[in-house]
Each structure stands twice: as C-alpha cells, then as structure tokens.
Length: 184
Image (cartoon, rainbow, N blue to C red; front, side, top):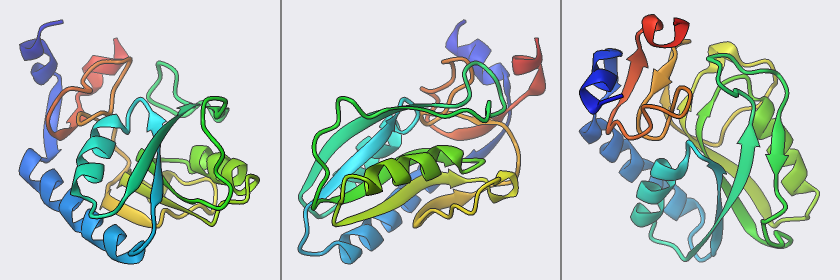
C-alpha cells in the first residue's frame, strides 16, 4: 500500500499536526507541575503510544525513565475483543516509583483498568494515566484517565501511532478512517 493510498482512506482529519503539538505541550506543562521535584517512570503501551510518548517526554521538564508494556485487546478488528492481554515481564521494579502510564486511546477502559491494577500490586509511590485520546461513550468500566489530550466521539481513528491492522500509524495527524478501509 502506497502512502497516497493510505491518505485516500481518510474520511476526515480530526486533529492536525499543529493541534497535536500544542496539546502535547499543554499536557507536558501540567504533568511537569504535578510531578515537580520527582522522577517519573513513563510506562507506554505498545505499539500505539510510541509516537505520543516520544513527543510528550521531550516536552516534559522532569527527570524521566521509560519502559514499555505490551497490551492487546483489538487484534485486527475495529472493536475491542473484551479480553486484555498484558506483558509486564520485561518491566523493572516499580515499587516506590511514580508511574505515569502513557496510552494512545482509552476506549472501553478495560486495558487501563487491568494495567493500573497490576501496577498497584507492585506498591508504586503513585500511578496515573495520560492518554492522547479518550472515547468515554464506549466505556464499560468506571475508569477515568488523569490526563487527556482530546476527547472524541465514537469513531474509528488512525494516525499519530494509532492503526488499523498495523497500517496508518505513520500519518502525522489523527483522522477518521473511511469504513471501506476496514470493512473489506
């Protein structure tokens, strides 16, 4: 699939590069103020949060460490399977540390609920969550992220790390995917 073919699959750009950059800077300023004087472990979910993590950590004015957790609930679908798999095996000890989970999108809330619970079991100093996108209309848990980039309606979005079947992650904006791209 050529890049031009990917952009043909876009129905609407929700947030362009400038809007994303401004919002990431705003989030970083708030997080910096909230964690002033502390080191923070940024724990990003793979693979969707990688681009957001890179921009966010460069904007933070704090000492940070970075780690990654594998989290899967979508597979190749546009809907969460309802089953969450986490891979925390490679993560280091989180006891006594300030952990900020960095996530691309919160949909049902199952993934972050399970991840926060797993981290709480390691006795961290604190656990908070920062998501780029929040889709509260889809929530099936009472989970609420601590820091939110943008709240969106129930639409299937791609770009800036978000994908459909491992495609579209490299688009520099966040956009709604045309149904024909995932219904075929």
